[in-house]
Length: 243
Ligand SMILES: O=C(O)CCC(=O)C(=O)O
Ligand SMILES: [Fe+2]
Image 1 (tube, protein in one colour):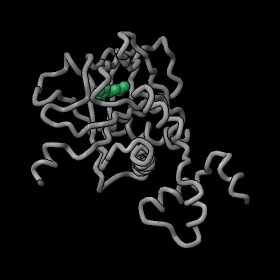
Image 2 (image 1 turned 30 degrees about the vertical axis):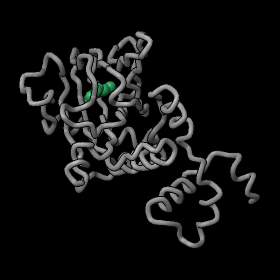
Image 3 (image 1 turned 90 degrees about the horizontal axis):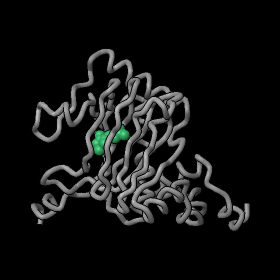
């Protein structure tokens, strides 16, 4: 294949895997040529450009339909088994007025196969964001969230008190055949005082800068499932402590 031809089309999944692999581990000798040719091009180019311009973006079909359905089933099963617990806001145990979801944090050392598929994609995205936007993201954390009908999350910012480590908020939705009339939009408040509603359709990933965008989860008429994820930089307080 000619090098120009290679650059003019999006990368295949295999090429992306190779690229990510090389970024993490360094290229295997037989992969080195392709990777150097493609080091500025990835399937997340549209997302990183939009994020750089607007501070937020929507990535459709972040995982395959089968992978998304598998996560959705696992989330429902874990919810039915009462493994999710009512979320808290900071140290407040009676926060249900502000926030009505139940959550279960992913355990990085004990991910299910389906959670691993999500974590691998997030890792590829984290690497692309660092490469293209120099965000210095070192880690991520994720949890399942279920909002029962009528539950929401009042307008808020995702930054934790006394901790500036969260840089990117990423919300991945797990709801098949969601209808707008069922509500449940994530309302993102924009700098010009307008807002943008993102409906929680299966396969959609919403990304936004955690410190810049207040947002709110509107109540829905059916169960609403998602994976909420944050990509983090080293907290400045932590960095200072290590100096
Ligand atoms: O589920 C969503 O759309 C957003 C959830 C959220 O804002 C949060 O967990 O901080
Ligand atoms: Fe949030």
